[in-house]
Length: 181
Ligand SMILES: *[C@@H]1O[C@H](CO)[C@@H](O)[C@H](O)[C@H]1NC(C)=O
Image (tube, rainbow, N blue to C red):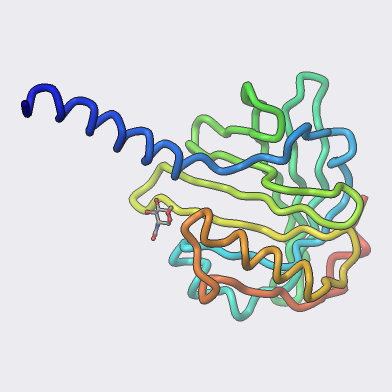
C-alpha cells in the first residue's frame, strides 16, 4: 500500500511546490513597448539589507533597453546622500518573453504585470549567497503614483511571499532627473 501511495503523494507535493514558485509573467509581453525610462515608486523585499535601509531610500530611475538578441540592460540612477549613483544590471533572455536571467548571480527577473504606458510590476529572485531573497518593484512612467497602483502592488505581494511590512513607498527626488538619457 505504502509503495503505491507514497510516490504519487510525493509527485503531488512537488507539483504544488513548483506551482508556488512560479511567478506569473505579463501575457504577450512586448519588450519594445516596455523599454524606456521608469521611476521606481515602491519596492518590497525580504532582503535584510533592504529592510534596514528602506526608510531612508528615495525614488530612483531605471532606463530599460534591449539588445538585438533580446537581452535586457537596466541603467539605474539612485539618489544617495547628495549624489546620484549609477549602476547597470544585465540580464539574458530566457525561453519565456518577460522572463530574464543573470546566470552567474542566479538572479531571475520577471515582468509580472504592465500596461506599458503607466505602470509595471517586476519581480526579482536571487538564489545565490547565504540568503536567497525575493523583491518586487513598482515602476511608473510618471513620478507620481496613484493609490490604486499601490493597492495593486500590495495585492500581488503575497503571491511572491512578501508582506506589506517589507514595503517602502519611495519619496520623490529630483536628484537624478537631470541624468536621464
Ligand atoms: C525571501 O522569500 C523567498 C521566497 O518566499 C524565500 O525563498 C527566501 O528564503 C526569503 N529570504 C529571506 C531572507 O527571508
